[in-house]
Length: 332
Image (cartoon, rainbow, N blue to C red; front, side, top):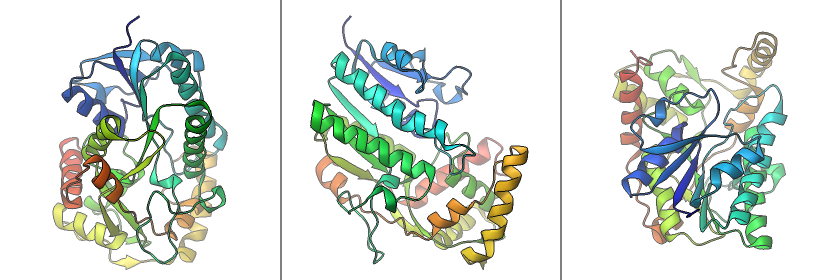
C-alpha cells in the first residue's frame, strides 16, 4: 500500500480539528481517528477518511496508521480532574507509546507529537519559560500534566534510542472556535462572558489562538528538526487581565473579587466529594488550586525564529472564542 495519507489523531477535538483543517488547506490527504460514539461535529467540512480507533487499543492504532506517510498525534485525555488517574495515564502515556511504536515499525516519514507546556519547566522569577527550562516529574502538578510529561519523555526516548522521526510541539493555552466540550479554559471564558463568575484566584497563563497552534503544527512538519521541542504560544496574561479582556469584549462586568487559594481549599474538598458521589464535574479542585500557584508564562521565540511561527494577538483569540460560543448558544 502506498504511504500517502496524513493521519491526525484527536481531530474530533478542539486542537486536532484545527490541525486537520490547516493540513487540508495545504493539500494533505487526510485520515482522521474518531473513537466509537464520539462527537464528530468538528469533522464537518473535512474531506477525510474517518477510521475508528482508540488510544487504549494498539491494534486499532496500527491499522489506522497503515498507509500513512505523516502522523500528527494530537489526541489526549484532557481533564483537570479525574476520579481515577489510571485511564488518563493509559490513554496519554501508553497510547502515545503504542502509536509511536507503530510509526517506527510502519516507517512513517515524520511525526509531529502534540505535547503541552504542562510538560515543561517553569522559572522561579516569573520570567517566561522556554523549551530548555529545567523540569522533573516532581515539579509537575496534577494527573493530566504528569501524563503529558511522561508521554513527552516516551517520545524523546524513542527518538534517541530507536530513531523515531518525531518533532514535539508544546501548545500553551489555546482558545478560539470549535471548543465544543468546552476545554477548562473555554469554560472559564463562557462563565465570565455570561456574567457567572463573581470571583477568581489570580494566576498567569499564556493565551494563543487555536488556529495559530494548528499552523504551528504544520510548520513543525515542514521545518521542525527531529528531536526538538517548540513552544506554540501567544501572549502572557494574568487571569485578572484575561477576565477584564473577556468582560470588555462580551460587554459584561468581569469578576472583581480576588480570592486567596486557602479560602477555596474547603470548597475544593467539598466539590471533589460531591463529584465522586454524584458524577458532577467539579469547578474547583485541590489540584487546580495547586496549579494556580504556578505562573504559566512562556516564550515562543524558538518557534518564531526556527519555524516562522507568527501568532496573532490574544485579543483576537478571545474575541473569536466568544463569537463562536455565542453562535452556538453557550454565551447569551
